[in-house]
Length: 116
Length: 114
Image (cartoon, rainbow over all chains, first blue to last red; front, side):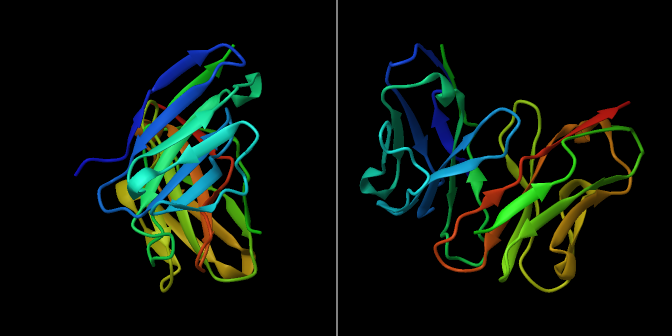
């Protein structure tokens, strides 16, 4: 079974440039998450989707971050314009359902962003 | 809102030493508890989880964790670590109700010397 796929693995940009990350969750997983992991910290939730609906985006900095999950499968996270403080690893995860009994999340390898 | 605290930022052990990583959470209701591990260069993967029942849960690679409700703790243990256990370990908690997200601690880096 294929896992969660993310791209690109690494991205280096200058500040004020835009950047986009893509995620393909595990087939059949209705719930998709974007987390941000700063150096030396645990992952922090940015947004959670149930199918194509963003049900929790309270931690997403909406002035510069946006996300979409068209057709309830793949998702894209965009930053425009990027700031120095956005340097982090952006993790995508999926689960069968956030309301399900297991609650287990499956993570991708992450996209490491460096903003210069 | 729930939160997770991991007491040790960096733990250094020799092979065969015993391991215990502390994790405390704050939330008054029922929770699901997890330990995730991230080996160097790899993605986060589930080590073990607790939902209900026996508070002592066993995971992969000889790890176990004990849920102590009165202490709001979910400490991770392994009786004898190996060099291959070198990784970053994250405790995570999810309130057992619809619409809640998984909250992670800051992580503990374990370095095992051979």
